[in-house]
Image 1 (cartoon, rainbow, N blue to C red):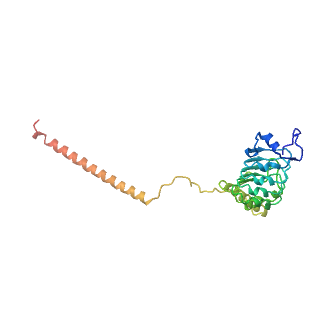
Image 2 (image 1 turned 90 degrees about the horizontal axis):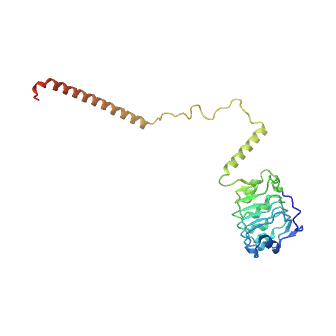
Image 3 (image 1 turned 90 degrees about the vertical axis):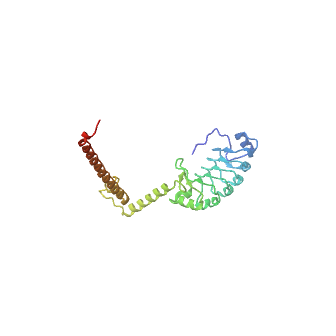
Length: 258
């Protein structure tokens, strides 16, 4: 949590006003504001924030916000950071159809039922309820299996607290979690035994190349050997015929006139 700076002159609690938004963004028309960062300003009342109809990214972290009613009109909202506030209900966010990323770590969400209102947000893929880096959490995170409950409540979510738990890339997460739980059960029951001599997974020589045992290859080798033998015999016969012809020619040299 960032310490609040004494240089901030906004009274506490403060209310978001058109003048405040225009001075911070330089936009005269509130509907022209696309990105808004109001971090650590002691904001309690969201005031006219609902008039920023085209707002896509909003950072309200480190404030005193308790009610989110004005956010219900922000249909274009994609990313919303509400970490470190005093929020106990997310109901107004049910109409933020384009919401993809939500950070509500460090609030007062007491049960997974408070997330049921997000079930209809088909594009919501990432939700953060706990942030160990800044020591932020919610009462509902006290249970060890709250992430599974969150997945049941909001099926579209694929990332919880920065960890992918659903969709592509989640297999390793689930595998490690299952192995860890199995080891804990075994150790707790005393059923885990560790042998002094470990055995290899594969037999010795498993990776060594082995001759192929194919009947087709064996038959091919046999046919090749037979042809080679025939070639040798033909060659021998040819040599004998040539030698005999040469002897005959040498014996009849007197009958030829050169």
